[in-house]
Length: 194
Image (cartoon, rainbow, N blue to C red; front, side, top):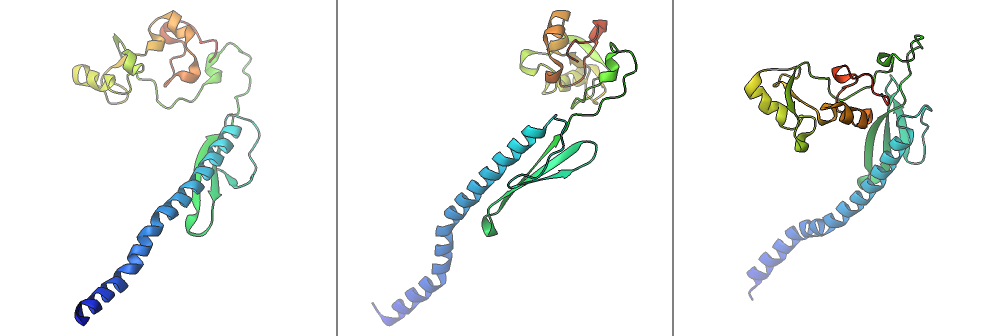
């Protein structure tokens, strides 16, 4: 081996060594960050579940700090680790909403309105939503749009949810599992669990 080859080899090793060392450390850095993220995620989910739908306001505990977002909505940020291994996770949750004053009509279900993540479509077709799309929100209502026109969501007439296909299914369903409000569907009366 001549001196030129040796000098070139040493130069290349000198340039490449820091990158090789950094590459060999990356899996360990990622593993430690992932461990911290797992701890922070578990803490945030546990904290949110503890207060979700409850009446008492949350207080800081351990690695988690709650923040009031108004209207009985909160978020919690849990932080685990330090330095380059820090992991922060934020989750939102809502306390029990304050009820309206009693109007003297305890059977009036409209006083007990529940929040749902979709608004009830204004137009429904005469078809039942399929088993694989029980509320029509996956694909069925988009297909109906191509045939029937627009509904409240800008899609076709919505199929009838399986929970509202007949009175037996309606009363066997539970409002906590509804995607949108079907209370008093077809005049069948207010749902007892609404």
